[in-house]
Length: 342
Ligand SMILES: Cc1cc2ncn([C@H]3O[C@H](COP(=O)(O)O)[C@@H](O)[C@H]3O)c2cc1C
Ligand SMILES: O=C(O)c1cccnc1
Image (cartoon, rainbow, N blue to C red):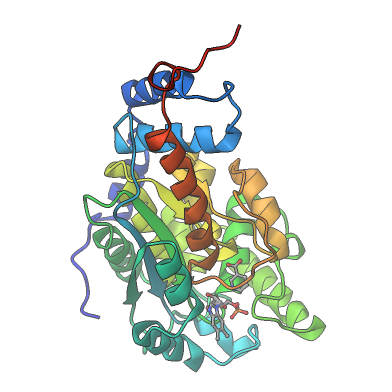
């Protein structure tokens, strides 16, 4: 992939954008709530579905929101820390899975199609893994700004939902390091089996994260520095996409542990970055539940999934579809001639 022109021209520019996050359209939320109150059901009986309709109304800026142009973005990147044996699979699987996405054979191809979503796959410098972050930063400033820009550029105006997925062998270790550096706790609190490493593999992951946290301990705790030091290209791209989506007031559906960890450094300094985010699901990766609680996000689904690729988010998009269908299509008490509450 050719280097993208920086979307944010410097780390300071990126941090400044995080200080100027727009909120939802409160008038659209009020209009959607007024409509909800008229629909033929006891007030509040559709519960979370009603909340979802209001959330989408606010971010899409219309009383009757829709899911006509939802897109799964899968960013892919390779990780220098794979030399430490932190994944059950070889790093070559990242590129092989990108080919599988492009051929239509991965889980996310089926799940995105089933949910009526389109899919974009964005591999980022797969032949150039990030540096081993136990002994230096994963990326240079320029590389991190380029990855953020690739993520931002993938969010096209006019989309009505963006789902953030990833592919990158070794990235559950980077995600745990990001969570620990951003939200506190130690390696053990955030580490898990990922693709399925055994107890020795977990011990290697903990050692890598401990060494990384110690190596970078004195570096600034800004969102940019944390992403650059212990993140990865696909992770920075997800962060850039989340920020750009909020600037464009496009709602975001997060996927699993890695997708959530990508915004942890941003959320630690600027909690409003999660305002336009829904957690699609809580994965089986043990740190994900803790991560969601610390981000203040209540996941739509708990199916025990542990895949990534945007798969859990794509399944959860079907819940959004149901919420928006009820909100748009139900009759009001007046239209249906149904008596209101006595
Ligand atoms: C065939 C295959 C397909 C995948 N799709 C997503 N992942 C998931 O596994 C990786 C994270 O786990 P770890 O840190 O243990 O490497 C990421 O690429 C993630 O998206 C996959 C992994 C494999 C093997
Ligand atoms: O939580 C996830 O999305 C996840 C878990 C394990 C491996 N890959 C992704």
